[in-house]
Image (cartoon, rainbow over all chains, first blue to last red; front, top):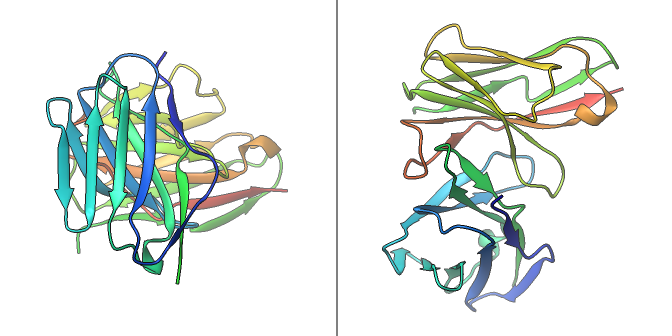
Length: 111
Length: 114
């Protein structure tokens, strides 16, 4: 079955630098991959969706890449700010038209 | 603003005492989901409705039930909560099913079982 791996260790980044988060999957390549932000005690908030035939997607300071050969997606936040501190989850579509979720990586942006 | 609302935000129940969590949406989305999320873990899908069609995940315990009386509302019933059911319960909606549709989440209900 499909498994998603996100770094369970928190990522500490200095303000102003680029933060890069990794999402690896183990089995088939999904048709779609989504990234969400989750703040403590809140529900996830959708950020970006990328399709399997797209190499890269951008939205303001956010960029997502999708490499089906490596079975990996990278999520970048450029010019990071303390307000970007949160847990970032990736999710893939499965054969039942639902999303399979990663546990997320906690990002800490230090001033 | 269109949104997903969950009540209550915090729920404390006793071991074995039935509890109901509620979710409502103003997005008029076809699909509604219930997820269970424990600390530092991935959201775990319990079940979802596509319109009135109910879809139960294979590993969702029988202790968990759901109702969707209309498009706007969905309820999660836990018939006999155990200590292991303490978690954040998230309701989400999407316009349609499939990975090409983003999900909109409510703020969650934090369930404590004493």
